[in-house]
Image 1 (tube, rainbow, N blue to C red):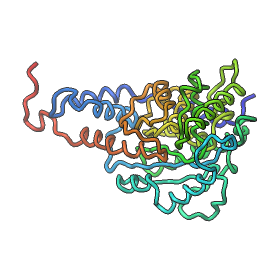
Image 2 (tube, rainbow, N blue to C red):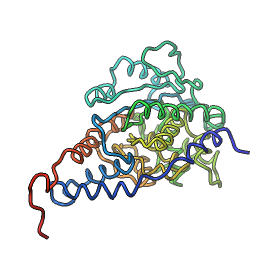
Image 3 (cartoon, helix red, strand yellow):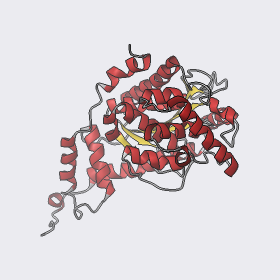
Image 4 (cartoon, rainbow, N blue to C red):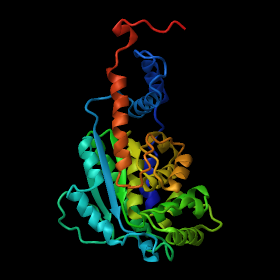
Length: 358
């Protein structure tokens, strides 16, 4: 008998197909007619071809762009794995709503619509203006002692992301960035990384919000203990990993990434936690991989492990480890540049320029 989360996802993933190779080839042929040496725009050409393969239509202007910040608390913070107290999740959500965070500045600068989603913040945000209210519960459980979420909580969190991706598609968005806020969520992402890739906790666990050496050693032990508790000798499914060692915001991001692929949206993955959600989405349905772009590579060591797992090369490497969707939004102007070059450059024929002779 299928679990509720499997029942929820089955009709969705059934309709996720790989990006069109026919459209990718069409894009490559057009790029080769533009007034430039062949391949001289480097990865911009790869990105333009990927985006055309995803959208399967000529690009429309202006490009619809949005960033979604999913916020939730984590029960694992009771084990002292973060440099900041749990209350910071709630406080930072208020900061987002007051437009005082880094992501607010970047989203405003680059014309990206910002949506802040409460999936599981341990605090009363009732009536908070501008917030997308989708709270499942007051944070995940302590995964060192029990599964982070019940099956019902997992299903509800997945549905938050699924529904929001549908709304983004209906609103005409084309590029969506996935961000998060949740004290303790690098511990969850590290456990996900170990469970998916087989990496030891010592390689997948970073300093998160900036814990010291002794605290980092403690955090690494906790991550390994969590993985051993839930998956010793087992080969878990993506949904099992998500339920046992994930978080409500990671589940919502996973649901959104899956649904975005179904709607042929381009998902720009942010840092470590976003990559954990993307990796889970690909584990659930491998066809999702072609719809992903890695905005940047963070300083968290587990992020590179996940990028390798996803076979993604980051657009930017800026030594960032902030989260919030900041690295993904910073990459959006690069993606938009690739689109504009594809659509606005003259061809050799239209410009009356002679092509290469050899």
